[in-house]
Image 1 (spheres, rainbow, N blue to C red):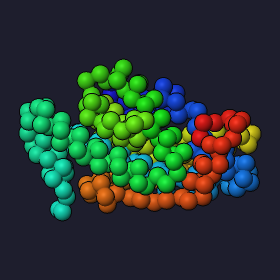
Image 2 (image 1 turned 135 degrees about the vertical axis):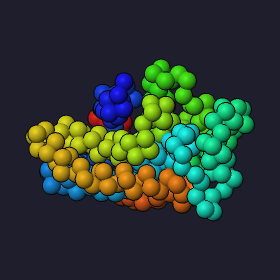
Image 3 (image 1 turned 180 degrees about the vertical axis):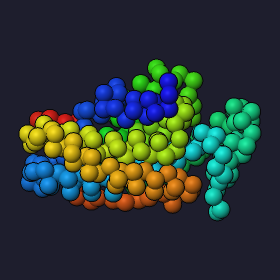
Image 4 (image 1 turned 90 degrees about the horizontal axis):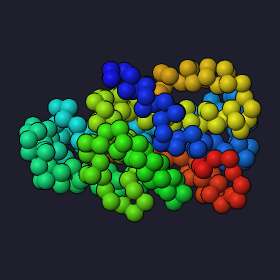
Length: 259
């Protein structure tokens, strides 16, 4: 399958990873009266792209970097795990050995811990790991030889961006393409939810997404560049109000979306 087709496949909301069940925090924002029309939805999407979108894309790109032999070396000041990944790229045979797997696991574990630290809401941490499990089920079926065994064995599973990074590496996509899929997914899910929650004209919502295309590409490019940094230096953009909304949303007995 051509690379462009694979990118479209993985970015498609119909990919069986459960993304359609999540509103990206929009349901709670609508209930709180913070989003009620097309203009406020646009502002919500832009804010989401600059925070969750950037962070998720950066970590997906960094996970891709950890396992894909794209020729990029470790950055100055990187830790031993980063240098080991660079060595694996230089020697693909060594990378296929148990030692190579241990090295990949080390950096993926650091990424998982750093993403946990950047996700203040326990509800959002649980959602990310739940989506990671769903994505992993699909990935193992389509690419059974991928390096999924190197993902950290954290209770609840690995975070969704890390699984996405490994999935895209297995598909032969580039780091930037990986970041683009991650950034794109943070706005399209919420936009689709906006049609259902607010009864908005779907044509106008799609036009809104087209207007965000350049911002999405810019976020992906920034995320891909940052993946050369050690995990501790990856973007940490936060949205405290979104964290609060997520905790409130998790207490609802009746809701349309899982998050």
